[in-house]
Amino acid sequence: MTADYTHRIIIISWKQQKLNLERKSKMIKLTAENTAKAVERCRQLKPRVRFIADRTFSVQSANNNNSYTVRFDVQNGEKFGQCECKAGESGKYVCYHLVAAATANIYRQSLKRQIA
Image (cartoon, rainbow, N blue to C red):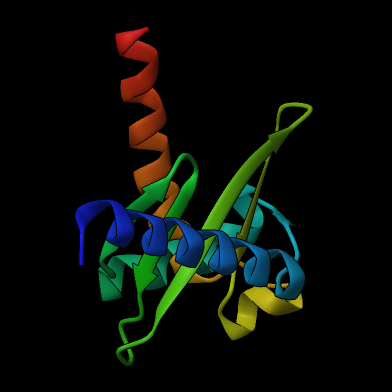
């Protein structure tokens, strides 16, 4: 298997994951109030976060071997996030996966601003 072929498979897989996430999960407006419990849970569990693409991350569940794709967007200065876990699919709750990925996203965006 060539590197180019493998790269295409990864891109197709990522695009499919993105489409699945957009269909299943709803964007949640992120505020200090609705993230407080998830922040505490994230501090306790310390999940692993992996960068996928700009504002898109994969977060390893602390409870099992599942990984969840988390995506962020900024609309009119307001921050939104979505996660493909059960809590994220409902669009009502901020999960610890969102908080973990948000921490990585904030750090990554600050580095991009410093370089620019």
